[in-house]
Length: 146
Image (cartoon, rainbow, N blue to C red):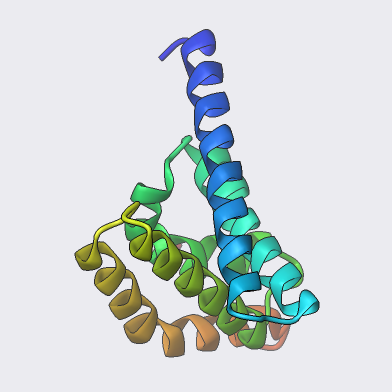
């Protein structure tokens, strides 16, 4: 893919992501979520879809279903100085809510949403443990592969 194709793909995905975030925000408002809660969910999801998915490849939210382990289990822990076991849980909650909204509006399938939920359920303990170890200077780095 040359630069112009990459740029066009990026712009198209970014535009769709903005539409998805707006839809998600409207759903959160309709569910009478508090303003601070809405802001946190939108910020978390925006980081996932517009920083991780879009800037890494670029990938659409549909591909994001299968990338959650890479994101919460590695990228978020290593690249985000604010990552903690608690922030991993918060990020996962926001992403689950977002994908539930996308499923309810027919943007992702029920199977994909179920897969995402299963990945989060199965990975959470490991991700949080790895994050705690990574953030502890007295522990060996869990991402030191050599």
